[in-house]
Image (cartoon, rainbow, N blue to C red; front, side, top):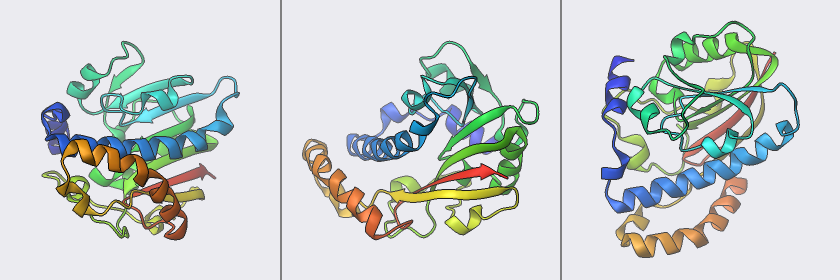
Length: 225
């Protein structure tokens, strides 16, 4: 975990080339829209406690801002960039600083591929209440698209499949995937690429139904049993 922490402590997305920023923003939009639909069923629940585990600089803050949410990340650098001033904790997903059966929902986006995911799942299971929900997003081992931006890391990075989440103590209740953008799209200048992606979003959603669980990002909802 030291190398993961060091990597993200020095991670500066603002310095990325513009075409990478455009593609990353597009992927985030797809993930955001998918998870938003999953969260609707929790909107009116009282005393509902959420953990955003691996929140980074708050790219997905708008998903959980209306919930009672705690935001956790291993990188102090990223947490400092997070505009929220409270309810932020710098800690390791493998050693969560919470009591057993604390949370109703844990959200974990693009984290488990960087750690021992089974150990992380066990720790998340510990802090989840019985029948609590876990929503994860990971790079998909069985993706039809292998976009290097999301696969080539200098740190430990192990894409995962739906089968990797068939673990004791959890039941998978939903799975889907997003992002089927061909890498050749990167040849376009960022301005043109941005315009093309507005039309591709509809296509991407159709492809996610045709090629279930074959997109670059795998989205899974699980319940603690």
